[in-house]
Amino acid sequence: MAFPPLRRTKLSDSIVQDVRRLIVARRLEPGDRVMGEQELVTSYGCSKGTAREVLKALQVEGLVVTRTGPGGGAYLAAADSEPAARMLRTFLHFSHLDGAGVYQVRKVEEPELAVAAVGHLDQAAFAAMEANIAFCARRPRDEEEQRRQRILELDFHDILADACPNPLLAFIGRFLNGMLRDLVVFKGAYKPERHQFSEANVSYHRLLLEAYRQGDGDRVQRIMTEHMKDAEGHMCALEEEVERTLLLDVPRP
Amino acid sequence: MAFPPLRRTKLSDSIVQDVRRLIVARRLEPGDRVMGEQELVTSYGCSKGTAREVLKALQVEGLVVTRTGPGGGAYLAAADSEPAARMLRTFLHFSHLDGAGVYQVRKVEEPELAVAAVGHLDQAAFAAMEANIAFCARRPRDEEEQRRQRILELDFHDILADACPNPLLAFIGRFLNGMLRDLVVFKGAYKPERHQFSEANVSYHRLLLEAYRQGDGDRVQRIMTEHMKDAEGHMCALEEEVERTLLLDVPRP
DNA sequence: CCCAATTTGTTCGTATGTATC
DNA sequence: AGATACATACGAACAAATTGG
Image (cartoon, rainbow over all chains, first blue to last red; front, side, top):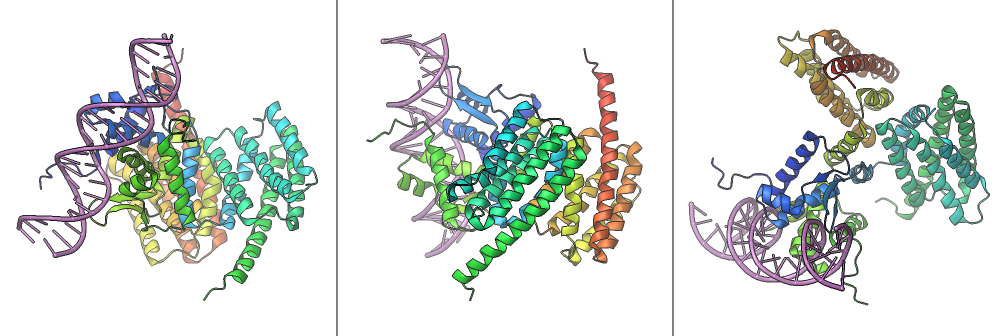
């Protein structure tokens, strides 16, 4: 036995783990000060380079932000879903998640999120929904505007996610919206042939807005469920179409 | 131009972004070689420390693993959900997600996952489910064994997640199971008073196993839906109890 | 089994940009 | 404007780990 350096894990990793534990143990909140470069060097006896790696890891995890200058250093970052979303995207990138997989989740999650948002929409949210519908209902002048409309249709669902009091549900909703945004630009879901899809979405959004104004949770649930079912059908049709064109371009051996 | 000091974003961050783009552009797969320390230094003209920060960031993101020695360097890591799960945990840590929030998602997600797993369970999975049920059905000799049983009940759901062909659905399922494992140990859900909860879970698992053996997706859906509804009730009761004891210990001003 | 080559891991010294006072 | 404090970046050197002769 007897490992001479007695270290199987990288030094920086163990320090990172230690700092993480310290953060939760001391009940630190966003904005509080965390150990900076010098403090890590002095309290752990490591070098600047190692301390920098530790800070870098915590930055990537979205836990801390660093500022230069006097009074600068490392501070606990505000809760941000972006790092988690980015890593989930990379994980799913290698797992080859397709649009059908996205909608298998979305069709059960989005109705739940929609009803959870009832009673949590303020005037600004209602105004944003109205403006969103107004823009998406306009007849697009060119393909570029059509693409922007499709992106904005997803923003409508982001408004609902922002109003959802359940942070996990809201995260999943926003994440799925982001995935669909990517699919829109990569799979060309904004093509003219898909115009009826866009019109269906807008009408569903109109119905949702009305149900929200009346605070009718059951109706919100029913409309959103149907909305997702409809959108799933469009997505599957789109993917089949893309599949066909790909098969024509690159025939398999 | 020549603007070395004219930089608003950190150098290492831009290199990280560049490497990420390179990975997806070249369609690299897990196991493929990525730029290591030396290569980063030579191709980006940065220092060793900066190159190490880049590698560190990619490691934290779960994208690459590094090995020492000849033939070592940075390699694209196998798809791993752990980094994404860890960051999602930290995000939700600051968002104060409670057990009720977990079950609001779980009760709509787990039935969908359960039916998706139908037809994807092999003999090993069936054997694992049987062994799991057998262990959890045993009368616990002490509180410690009871706690282990509660953890293992969640492993039953992990078996289903492993069989689920939708990677996103499987990720959410495994993530929720992990969250509940933490709640079990922190909120003491394994207390003797909760024994009937455990028995209910085991009976639901038995019914699920039978439905899976018959490949009856509808029955799987119904049983799991009821299972989640039941578990949600127990979780809410538990949290109310914990809330009461906390109010007794630390009366609010 | 040891030795050498290779590549990451770690340390120290130094310099520079940047924000605060 | 200058001094201070801090992160950011570079360079050189050594240690540790792994592979192959």
